[in-house]
Figure 1 (cartoon, helix red, strand yellow):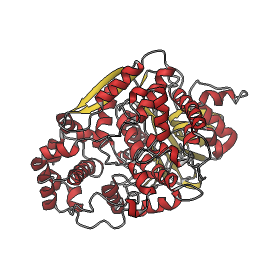
Figure 2: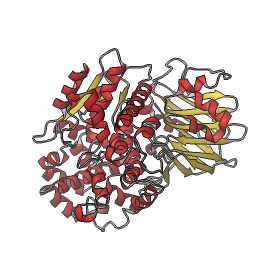
Figure 3: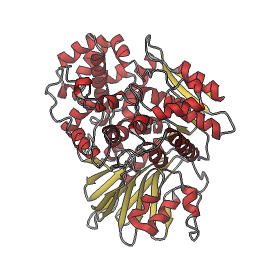
Figure 4: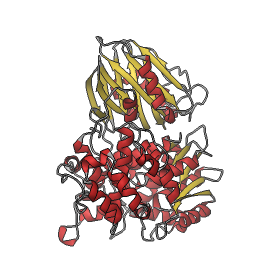
Length: 587
């Protein structure tokens, strides 16, 4: 796991500026604190910050082979199999990122079809003077590109392009609408004017400062549900999950996992316990707010059942106010998901013992776990609802202008998700895997963990698991009000102590309660921030913070607080000045 960046300039441009390359490296240092490297070849520059996970001795980057040079962020889980399939190749390292370089020399831009893992890769070919940029099909690892003076720039995080002075600090108003209403943004365009995402599964070929070709791998089958019986499905699922977890454990450094006590993480710890001789190290977060959902007791019971070592992290209100400017600052491509709070604190604790953690992201999307999937499959007269139909500020009238275009990106994704022979349920899952998963959940995981130099791995988000689970009959995913039916059946057989058919309580963070405790103090500070004053009426913002009566009021306050801190850091370019109150008070 690492941070990468680079410049792809036209032949008429000045050579890459060493000062700019230094700024890129420094801005991505947290992603790769174990070392850095760079290569400048004419008008192309590649930079790399390394978090050493596999091949600790000889795996430094850039990697070179023939006329090609590679920098990569990620893990190629099938690197051993790829090496074995290329017996005539003389490998210079044991790095998992060297096989992709040789695949590219053999297959060109189609090389990514052979990769199984999470990755953002840049390969420069000196003779043809091309740079190939690739991102994994599920969008687990980030990659951004921007048209800059003299050509193109790319980086693992938008903030690196901003800190290097390659792109000006400005927001797209339509993206701000989308962010406030949805809590994330959709599609290729980011919230920053001039910075685009390389989309999940996309491979882009660049030359002379321009994009000359692009194609995309879509990992979501556009086919109808298959016919399969439950016993066969369970056997196939067991094999796919076991293989995926085994691959995701490949590491030359210590690893652990995040355990919530829910279905997905209980599946992971069961499989990890089966595969490991030593007790699995599991980390769980809980909260000190009265009445909040706390999964620590259930997680501890699951850990005891498999003989795991369990570490609990309590997140207090004081900790949140102290560190929230740092947490929000890590979310340069913003998601307002309040789960960034426990994720950041879990990563901070985990880094004391491990450099890699396995997590349960993707389980709900691939196995049909969300309540909104049931609602999407019902007719309106039985309570059916269109997914993502309502926005957070629809009934909280504090914004200067009523959001009108915020759902355009989601509507376009809905059309694509319904293509082929997918069922209504499968189309709903595909919709979430297009934007919600990569631009909220996986983005949150990447930034919160990489802020502490921890690599997050997601065994559910894997081609083998997708092939085994996504096209299962709807009834094996959703029965009555209960989702992830087949995964619950698997747990019932393999870890009944996890109580897989108990009602799902859901995961919530008590941000509303915390904000309510400090509402009269926070309201004026948030309302006075330039970013918030541009989009909302200050007097209405203050009134909202003073009188939080419903959950939606607290959630709206959380989003406004997030945006105030985010805008201050990434648009105004100001560093945190202490805790939340000190930072928002600073001028």
